Image: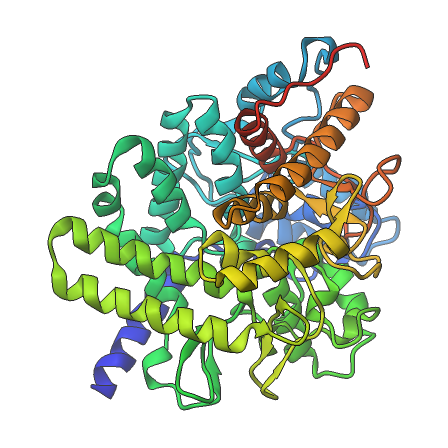
Length: 524
């Protein structure tokens, strides 16, 4: 049995390695570090998204010949040899007078990308079908963003676009064994919060349960990616994304296979590493795992809320991730039920039941009346309350009493004039106060509705929609995130300027406007 499991792991690794494109740092050693450490491009993501005009070997030969010569100008060299990327929304101007709904409908076209031809010279990983990008510096498809974008696409009766995007994700699973953070070579070491099962269920609502069986192979492949190495784990140990708790229960954590600085944020990571006492490979694993969580960055992952050098992401078993894994197990179970396979249905139902029991055991903090992450390395529950606590409500894992306590905590501590704040810490990180984010607003609102907290759900939605619309009327934009504490200010924190577009904001806003029959007031 052990030999068989080792063979499976080797096959997975071989498939993953063979499928990988080379990253810009691998293609341009020395040149990459020089550019990313310079001020040629203010955002490190720009260079890794550039398209080389010539073969990488030719560019490197020229660089090595010229770099030591008097008068060598790195910026001129880069602009001669590379084509910088364009922002998907850089040339788009909306007519505010036409209203928010018209704006969103137009953006579906602005943010849509055609199937990629693919090029060994570009960091972009080719996709076979059209897709929606978030906007701004995010010029490629993103995993968890796409689910919330799809919520709006469904409201716009764009099922074909949803189907194309899900087919793209299925293609990525078949090609790489998992869904990368985004379709770029430098993202191929990590995934993001696993929303693929949510996407499949969303499409199944309009297309029927046959959708579950259509994507069953990819659902199982993704599940195996997250559970890689789990069966041979000893208690209290972790490997890749799987963690076996002290009681033998299997849970999951965020993980990235690389232990080097992120290429798209190279200088940020190198500078942050100067503040840590951890060995650099450990620190970079924590940084990259936080990027895999989508919450990059948040005091949620720090032992000291004010210091990124204390990041401990891979030591934490996150509540939101494990709720998503629970949903994945149930979705796979239902796909077997549709096929009439009782044995596999029972198997995955049992996996989900065991995970639900563990979620309630490890994440529920009765003293603080909140669901918190759990540190599996020291067997202690994290004490930083975050909006990740709403995930057990979204997936109906929480008891009625627990949901009531979470609702009370949201109302007392997290609800601000513009919606829900992400955490209660003003750390300067973008996934902390004062910022609010569309996906977390939606998960909280939908989770509260599951437990009949309709009044609070509607209040959160109303405050969020009013903020979105007010900023739109002032700027003509829908933004990546918002300051929900002081709604006269824009959002802050993060490694890059505030982005507009914006896929998941568009999707959540349109979904909530339709759900609550909410219309913008003209003339304000």
